[in-house]
Structures are given as C-alpha cells and as structure tokens.
Amino acid sequence: MDKPRRDEAARKAASRRRLQADSREASEALDRHPDDGWVLADPMPMGEGTRRALRAMIRAVCPPEPAPQLPDLEDRIEVSVRRMLPYMPPLMGRGFAVAVHLLDWAPVWRLAAPRRMRSLPPERVLDVLNGMSHSRLLPLRQLSMVVRAAVLSAYFDQREVHDAMGFVPQPFMRERVRLRRRLAEGEIPGEGDLIGPYSSEVAP
Image (cartoon, rainbow, N blue to C red; front, side, top):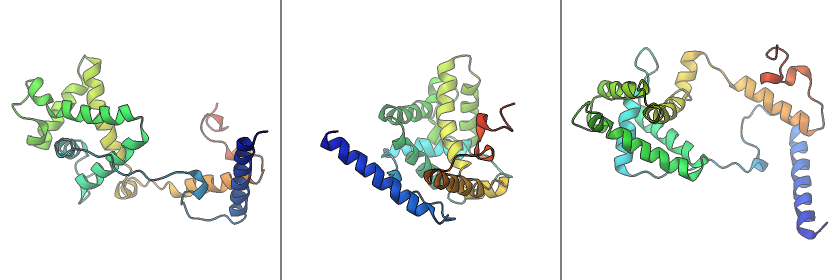
C-alpha cells in the first residue's frame, strides 16, 4: 500500500477509535459529531430584489391563523430557505433565484395583475400561485411548487410549529444517536433498530 493510502487508512482508524471512545457514555446532546465534517452553511447571497420577492411569497404561502404566527416570520423563513440552498448543487441554487424572479413577475405575464408579487397583498400573491399550481402546463406547476415547497419546509421546521403540532422529534433522534454509537462499537442491529421499509412493522 502506498503512503497516501496508508495515511488515509490511519486517519480513518483514528477517527473510528475516537468515535468508539465517545460511545462509551451515551450523551443526550444532539450536537453533530466533530468527525462528521458537517458545517452549517451561511445563507446563500441574494440581491435585494430577490429577497423582496421571496419575502412576498413567504407572507402569502405560510399558513394563516390558527396556525402559529411567528413574530419574525419573514426574517426566519428567509434565512432558513437561503441556508438550505448551499447544500444543493450550484445550478439548483441559482435556479431557485431565477424561479423567484419568474414568479415575482407572474402576475404580469399571466395577466392577473399589473404589478409584481412584491407589490401585491398576500392574498393576491396566493391566488396567483394557486392558479399556477392548477395549470395544465407542467412547467408552471413545477415553478410554483419549487418556491412553495422551500418556504413551507422551512416554516414547518420552526420550534413553535413543532409545539403546536405535538411533534417531538428529539427522543427519536437521541435513540438513533445511541444506535450509531452501538454500531460503532461493533454491535449487530436488532429487529427494533430497523426503520422504514426494513422495519417489521412497515414491511408487510
């Protein structure tokens, strides 16, 4: 084995030993393991015009009462959406910005209103988006879906929304962290460790 491969093998072995050492005491923390190599991305840069258009769609798409109304809704959802984009292929991030601009002008080119979305009240913006969602043309439906999906995924990931829905993912996440540590120690997974299509409760 040449030196670069030996160095890489030694690095992986050292990383595994550190993980095994950390595994000896199961922590309730949900922090990422330092050897994951994961870094929280900075929000993708966006011009002021793109941000204004995106925020108009955030106001329109996020559910009204009785759904939780976040006091800093536009700021939080905008940052969350822009933080998602760097994890996507570069063309998808740029394509999202293009989609926002196309939607911003949609009221004009669909002859629904003489102004862009950023200048319309939320209910009119939602009318335009809903009209595109039911279009017979697949590209128009997809264009509406792209931004709507990004905004709603960020909204439903907020703590206040989790609380209102009774969604408590932390126990499951902690259980999977403990499972990861057990596997790192060489344990064979049991029937109760399997999830999704591999679970005996789901597979039938």
